[in-house]
Length: 411
Image (cartoon, rainbow, N blue to C red; front, side, top):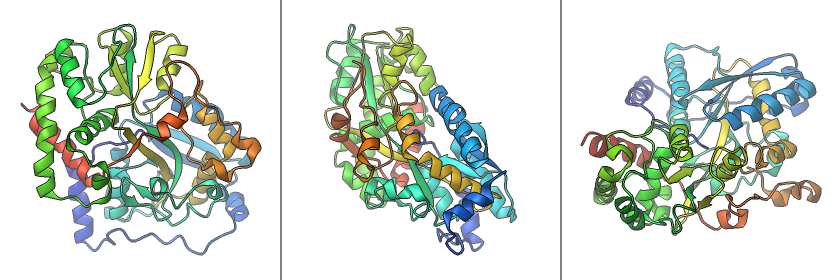
C-alpha cells in the first residue's frame, strides 16, 4: 500500500491532548453484540458509504469505480462514494478533531489505511471494532500471520480488514543500465558514475519513505529488530547517521544536483518515462509492466529486487468510531475481500495489487484464477514472496522521516 505517509506534529500534539483528557489510549471501541451478517447486509441496503482513500493512482481508482462500485450497487443496493485524498493523515487529523469535539456522527465511513496512520488512530481510539474477523470473507484470511495481525508492528485486533499486499521493487531501463545497483554501496557508486540519472521522491510521499527505509535496512542491517522492537533512541542515534550520511553523499549527483526532489512517485514516473532518470521504484510489483503495456514506459523496462530483500506490507480498510453507516462499511469491506474481487484486483492489466487472501483456504477453482504476473517487466510471485522484508514499526519510521527533513533536506 501505498500509505506509509508522514503523520504531522499537529497530529501527535492532538493525540497527546486526547490522552491527557482521559482518552482510552488504544482500547477498542466496542462493536456491540455480534450480529448475523445477513442482518448487517439488510441494514446496509439503500445506504451510501463514504470511502476515503488515497486518490493518486489511476489504476486503483478505476478498480474501485468500475468494478467495486457497480457490484455493490447491483448485489447489495449500496452506493459507494469514493472521496480521494492526497494524504491519509488528513483523514486521521479530521477524526482526531471530531473525537476531541465529541462529534458522534461523522462523514467518513471507511478509510484505506495502514502503518503509522492506523497506529495514531488506534492510540486515540478512533477505530470501531472488533469487526474484521467476523465478516464472511475473513475465513480466507490468515489471521495468524504477522503480516496480517500486525500492521507495521501494531496489533490489528479486529479493527481493520486486509485489502491487499504490496512489495517494493526497483525499476530500470535494461538497455541503458545492463547491471543495476542492488544495495546502497552499489547505488552510491552508480549514482556517482551517472550524475543526474537518479533521484527519489521527497517525504512524505510513501515511495520516498519506502526508499529511505529500504536504504536504512541495507546500511543498518537486522530488519527484524526494527519490526519487533519498540523505538530505542540510543539504537536510533547509533544507526540512523549511516543513512543520512549516505543520502547526503549521493545528493550532489542526483537529478538537478539534488537541489530539488520529485514531489511524488507519479512525478518520478514522469522523469523515468522521459528518460531524465534511468532508475525508478514502486510499491506495486506489477506497475512497471502495466506502464509498458500502456506504451508509457520503454519496452526495455525491467523490475528487480535488492540483494537483501525488499519491503513488504499489508494494506487495510478501517471504520471510524463515528461512522454513521458501520453496516454499509462492513458490507464494502467484505466485498473487497471477496475472492472474485481479489482475482480482479490482482490482474496485471488492472491494478495489479497482490491478494490479501491465503490461497490455500480457497476452493481450487478460485485459487487457479489468480493470475501469475506475466511480461518481461514483472517478477514471479515466488521470487517476491521469497524476498519480503517486514516494515519497521511506526515509531522508527516517523523518526527516520523527521531525520531526513532535519539532516538531508535542510543541509
